[in-house]
View 1 (cartoon, helix red, strand yellow):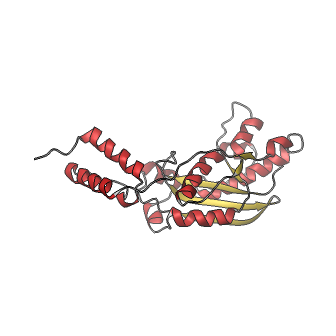
View 2 (tube, rainbow, N blue to C red):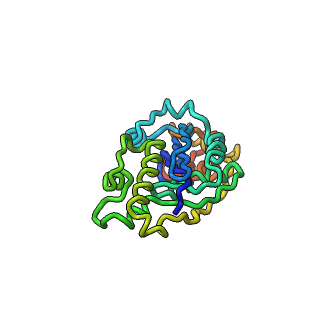
View 3 (cartoon, helix red, strand yellow):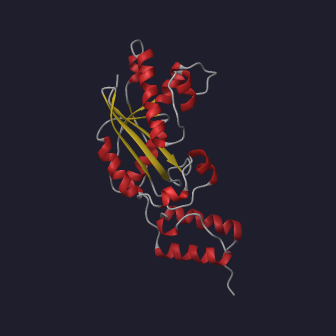
Length: 238
């Protein structure tokens, strides 16, 4: 059974690592079942947070606007994590965002992982909800805060330890790490021409974006441009 790992959780602007951004990272280094160190930081997504995200997490635009960029943070996190496997509730979600960020900086990030959601589906009755809060309640793990990165990574760690305590002896094979598989390509920066075209569209249609165009990738700016043209039309020559 795995007893040393990095419990990790992210808060993000949405669910798609190819379009959305990390706004908070929390991680707990666990060695031989004991917490050794924690890591926590906000991340500047260079865009305004949606009302739903702000309401769910309690994170404000002011908190992320002054935070470090992901290109700085991802290096710190990789150093913090070392070669330990990642543990999380639906860990592939967190891994997908982190791997995209790492690859964008030319860094390798292949990991093994442990998924407390998968374990919850194994050890909880079918009719029970399996989200992190529900699983913690079912296993008697006390949590004081939800939808904040460090609190949720800590909750995943405590949940895993409780599952090991109850089921590890007879189901030890369930508590081994597996390769995390997520394929990703490095995002290319938007060209000067793309930025100028988008700025012209925004000015022509009097649109205010919630994202900072200087920090958009080539694919992101292309999607936004196509969406504006589809909804408002092209610039008409006078």
